[in-house]
Length: 203
Image (cartoon, rainbow, N blue to C red; front, side, top):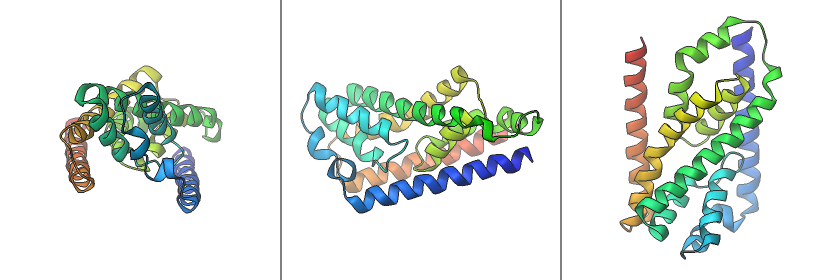
């Protein structure tokens, strides 16, 4: 029953995210659909908007890879990656807290969720960070399952750092939109390899 409740929670989260994403996409909000024009100048406002968009990615369909590339192009490799990492962790924190507040939806007193968390929880957090929709769902679920905050946020930082550096580097080197898709593909392949390696080490 505990496992059933977990999957029900995941299904509800995915359905809600897809609904919000669809509404925002149909509304065509410029700042969300194409934030590059407001991230093109080196300023505190642009940095705050970039980080804020990545935080909002927890509940809105923000093109996070585009934001990270733009941050790298505007602020350079190091600063762009740092801002991308800060925003990515902020987005994870939003999802985790929302999940934590809904943790009573899960069955208490069962060892199944605890066993699933001990076996795959942190690895799932690490490898999910670059993946749209999956990242948000895992963040919510991690909070709902009551995963330890310090370890969970360390895993989120580890999973966010790679994409932050990769996309920032692409922007710093003057990547085009097409190049960004190539970088995303490379990050996705690296994520898959990490998942396979992690599972093999844990088995």
